[in-house]
Length: 613
Image 1 (cartoon, one colour):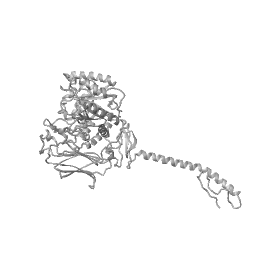
Image 2 (cartoon, one colour):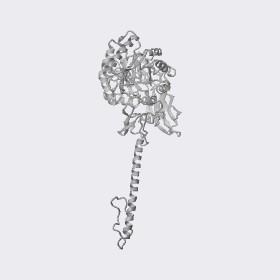
Image 3 (cartoon, helix red, strand yellow):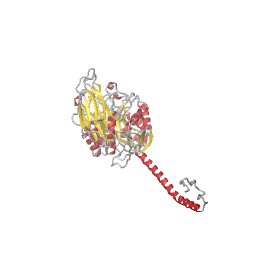
């Protein structure tokens, strides 16, 4: 399965056709994509499944247009710019693509194709790509344009069995790609941005980095090494990313780096293994990629909907096509949306160049539901391969804003409370777990709880092996749901938003660089990094009213005061004139000393005077 990120470079290219760009360039134009697995049609943000690809068939085949729109909304709120639709020429593609592009256009979201070359290695496949995909949707308003070019990618294509049109060699396959891209450019009327994926096996063979220079079409190359090698026991590094960056730079290409949180597949005897996700894989590897100089041009999250391989970041909807063998471990109990919100922080950091300010205390934590070394009571399959590489730990990311009273995080994982100090910023904390109940709390210096919550119990004897992670976020209203966010006192906007467009359902909707309206996860403030003068944001008051509202009110009050002062100033000469006239009349009046006028000046209503009797 695939989903968020694209695998290693493969020389079958990613296309992009020139024209007026639909994707507005940011000050720091580094987009974040999500891979969508090949589910009877597509998968969001690179989702790859090499073994038993058919297991992913149907991930989207039951989706309605509303489901797509809801997914696009979540992705935008997390700072994702586009979905990579992994397609394999399924019978459901025509109907599902129509729904997806319609929803994307209505949502102002972007899509692009990732052609699964396991399915386009038959004769005449290039004709199918041109007629059913690029020719039909390359010019669609919802298709991603980058630098004015139609952005296209692939999954694999560099090894026998994945060559375009069943070519006999890698060189012949590339020649066929050159011909196909020329035809696509002519059909669409725009140039093609090529981002090829070189993939030797499901976990990339890094010797394939030597194929980077074979991409003669320009654009970029990709990697699928979001987890490292199978059986990895050492800490995840950026060594492979740096090798790709160096090779891509030498070939004048951009590099698309993968980021993932988890990996566990348990659907058949030959497709039963885990990949190491210890040591805060998603936040630490993402931060390490951001720190690289030079770094990747793009990031792709792996993935949105690869349920069979457990690296989905999107929701497990009722209409989701979860592979039959994965229904026991890919369901709503294994919610990964908290990891999506965690990635939002790094998505913005990657694109802006600076870590976004933190607005409120927040806890994101995740763990597996049983220890690695257990026996399952009724599982027809054995324990997954490489299970011994996983640590029995609870992982947590604690967000602490400036001025917070938070001092410690306390994690109870199996009856033993363990605490660690926290400080301002993002704190990555892990503790060893035991069988039993789980609970987490953020406390101040007097041990008063500021945030707290519990998760599912950790069990000693599962009925079936379950190495998928469960993740949680506290406060529970810290999601992208408007129905939940509106209860928060402070209104938070996406970094880089240009203006507040309107007020809607007790929440403010803002415009981002793509020209779309959206709200971001409240964990992130709207304050732009100090070194990014190209974007602006609108901070809010503690009452949930944008600061500019108070400024406008103050200006109105000031104008009113000036008008009153001006009117009062104009009235003084008239008052003095009337006063002089009254004295004259008093001197020449009748014997009782009264004048003909003993009331106020009724013409302007400004002064009311009485004669002295």
